[in-house]
Length: 182
Image 1: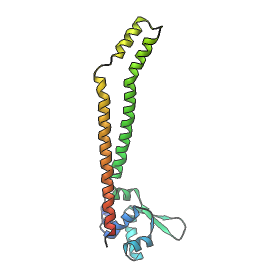
Image 2: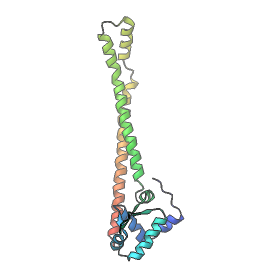
Image 3: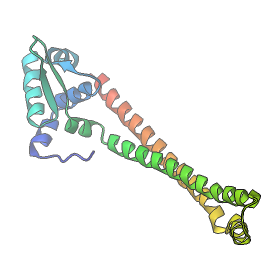
Image 4: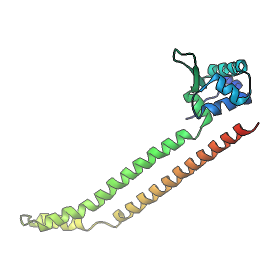
């Protein structure tokens, strides 16, 4: 998901405490006091930081009518924190459609000889149907290339998908290492 960063969002992301709060909220919902203790800041200071993040549209407050108010990431906040996530889902969708297209194409490739053999075995088939079946049984040479092209495309898309997943995991690892630094 491409996130457009406006002036308010950039101002909200300028603080290290706010960025660290976003990273913590990337794992689960947190209360204001939990974030304050995890980041070693005062609760009122954390409230100001969360208000700035909420104003930028990066986090949202969940008021469920209880004493505790939880904060979580919005879609925009997830896009800032995990920019590769949308690309992974896109590649996964393309991969699924390429597999389905390959299966359909291979089934169509092997369907012609089945029809030809059924027509040859039929005792009712006249001479013209027999001639058509024999000519259909002889597949042209370029049709043999398509399964290899589909397999190559499948392997290429699979490779790209694996690369994106590895890149996302490395990105998440870098996010976590920053949180442990004091």
